Image (cartoon, rainbow, N blue to C red; front, side, top):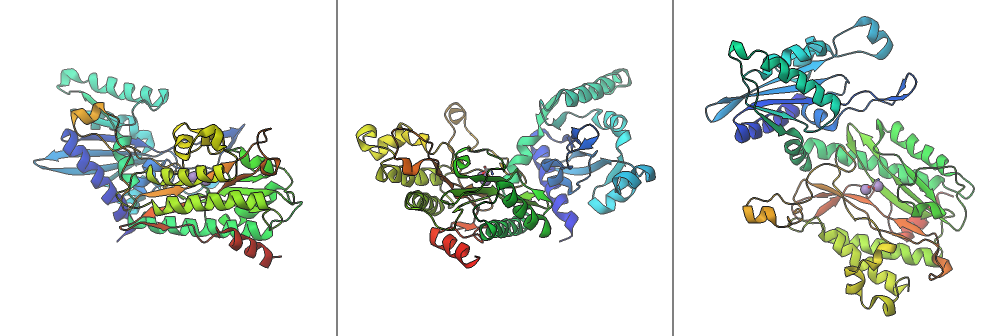
Length: 458
Ligand code: GLY
Ligand code: MN
Ligand code: MN
């Protein structure tokens, strides 16, 4: 398959939905803006995921406009790409631009224009359209542009031109498509996970007491970039000791100390797709007794969640499975006391476990680390609309993370041996026809395997 065919197929799948929903219409989708970091320096540019999903185009300053024209029971799709025009002076400073002349062949769109012509062209394209598909309530700036286009179209009323009468949300349609990964996406996600797993191994091998968190972060980055990944998928967490109990900790300057754990939550972004892996290991290569006890509970919880990650189960079943093992483990280790919580079921029902496990076990993974798509089934009947919608059924092609954890903050009612232990184990799972494929298992998970890896690298 030609590379462009993937994006054409996706645009056509979206056009078909637009045709079925409103008998055609115009879809307008801009990529992400450049963002200033400070003074005249920008953040590294990252395209908008929805825009890239439909175009494969990663330059800034671009907008996709899809004109879906009803044709009996069928439709015709004309895709227009608006992009930065060629400009020798700007290209000398900022880099080569594709330009509208080359865009139709390079991207498989029917038409391409300079982005300077967007306003004028959109007024033409919106004339006599019924429905417009945009990101609803995106920003004041986006609203201002739409108001401007609508005003221009309304201004042509005496020429017999009617403005659109219906605005629809484009994201809901694209996000539902993005929830199910195609073969092209799965191939990239597999490779992204392999690179990230290698980075975790590298960090385990290099780690020794006295190093600083940022030094391990540098090793992760080295492996990501040296393997061709363009970026991190999210800010890397390298958390020594007590820092692991801060869920959104960044890599800091804390010294990694013998006898403490190091939690690393890091994944690369490859060709626009995220990986998301967490491993927790002893800084000196050997778990203490209490660390090992909580680690083994977390690992068993992950195994239980993995077993529940299969088609026909709901999105929530892996979480429920993990919760049961974690909570039983907390009772076994007397972090939760049976005399206080009554029973395992009661500890789960009342949320007593939340003191030590305060996040969910899974999220969708894809172009965005917390990827898009509804976590609930869509209601199809009126009675179902008013009821709470059931959790999403896991289906082949979805990718989720499986990331149970335990976090113990110092407290008088807890044995001091457990204080400041923070553990999370996270892998990426592709749902297939029978269960799931773990994409990220290149990095060791079992405590014995981690210890052996760290021992062998000394
Ligand atoms: N790294 C972000 C997360 O695990 O959700
Ligand atoms: Mn995650
Ligand atoms: Mn993570």
